[in-house]
Image (cartoon, rainbow, N blue to C red):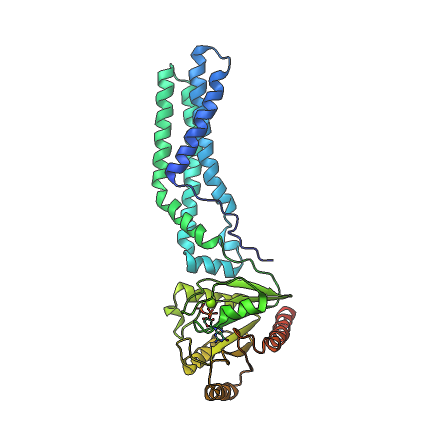
Length: 340
Ligand SMILES: Nc1nc2c(ncn2[C@@H]2O[C@H](COP(=O)(O)OP(=O)(O)OP(=O)(O)O)[C@@H](O)[C@H]2O)c(=O)[nH]1
Ligand SMILES: [Mg+2]
């Protein structure tokens, strides 16, 4: 199981929220100490010292929790590393996590320093003044890392819902936008995915399971060089590169998707060049396409040496044969990969 390593990242509090939380806790702790039987002259100092210690630990612990629950990117499986790069940027991500560590360490250190100073304070006024000074410094530290906190909050939103994968024979469905990839995933595995009649409906990676076979639906790809691909397309490329034992390339023969058969064949050739992974082609939407188009496509695929099957994902035509084919091919490729 390759569980999404970002699943456990906690909600990121912004400076004001975190400060409010810490101050509230500080007040609560102070309240407890006020009730205690301590000589009057000492009580004020004890209350202030404990406020400072509480505020420091709430802030530092909160920042530390983010660090602890966020996996070190460089130790992740390559697929997740590259997803971080595509979705948020590894360098920026690491720099921002570094800011959390800096702030957490500094707040803890200041907490200790101010607690000691308060203990040595000459009177309650001085103790209160020191506590206020401490709160001011913590606020300014958090303000300083506000951009980094905001960045990590956005990164978390993007990363926490990445799918969890099984280490099992895997079929990645790829093709132009709108050709029926998500429809097919849904019909094969029952996965609950968004399907729409416009391109780029799928903006991330969807996973479903057909027995032991894992099936991954990807965003649509256009035929263009790697460096021109957008973040949505790059996720499809990463899934193909790191997760696929078999590529199931879907072609919309009806051309209702908005792209011609020739354009789709060109992408198929590109994919074949780019990845050394077995490819199986599914000619989709045969319920819509006219005979001539299907025939033309079949001839082209034969010329190019691709194995293929004719289906309709939506009308569920020939899906049992498709299942059998992809299962057989994915298992075989998975075995080959693992025996080398
Ligand atoms: N008639 C017919 N329509 C289909 C078939 N398969 C898919 N569709 C329709 O084609 C449209 C696109 O389907 P999707 O499954 O969203 O296509 P996709 O490839 O996942 O699209 P993106 O996520 O945008 O890349 C939807 O309106 C589907 O209902 C089919 O076999 N026959
Ligand atoms: Mg889709």
